[in-house]
Length: 341
Image (tube, rainbow, N blue to C red; front, top):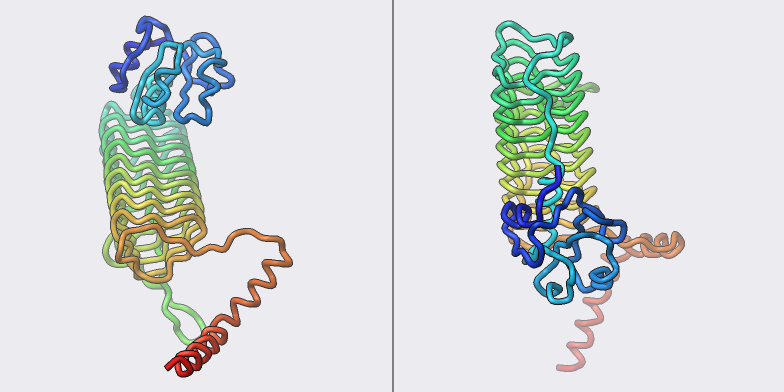
């Protein structure tokens, strides 16, 4: 259903400029947009499209507002306003409350009347499914799991015993919450499995990407704070704690008993070793290996940049010589200092 530009301005908090009655039915890329569409231009790099786009309206930064001849929404953060516009024009559709015929629900589970369970869902004994929850096809909810209000669980998700999921969360397909942590003790020539008896506690407004695994605690609990956003294919080990509003990109691996602070940004394919801490407001760029605790907020990196294979091989071999080169440099510096005295 189309919305007027004035409705979009009121809902997003943006400043309206031009015809507020302009009807908008779709959000689109500024190059491909046509009549009835809204697009956005947030930097001077794309200012040419202010006059060439066929969109009916734009979201623009204040710096570009004077150049815009179309009806527009003016914002300090046009990316954020445009994201809100997209959400308003594309509301999430959920089926009406109910339980599919092929769902299997233990009689000792508590299912709110407003929840929806799709085909093949399994709900074990003691589970609590709160108001407005959606559980997609073939998902399994284990014993004594609690799922908070309005949480959306996609298809083929597994949440094992005793885990807690907060309100307004989204778990995408293939997520596993509460698998056993990787705990083994050497026993002669084999390994003895350490029982993993903790749980996973997930706060409110958390989003977890497809095929991500969050292990249960070995003794205590693995804890994910409010507002955390976790991308696809991420491994979070046992007893990890992640502070509120931290964002973690795809393919990152976090070993056990790591504590990550609030408002951190962790890039893609980052490796974080076990039993270390990362303070609040830290940024770790992609492919970094974090081998020690980070105690001062800042931006941290460790990966080497791409090069031709022959140069990379030469430089990789020279890395091995850095220690001996450093020692030789110290000897030369001492000789120079002695001569200057």
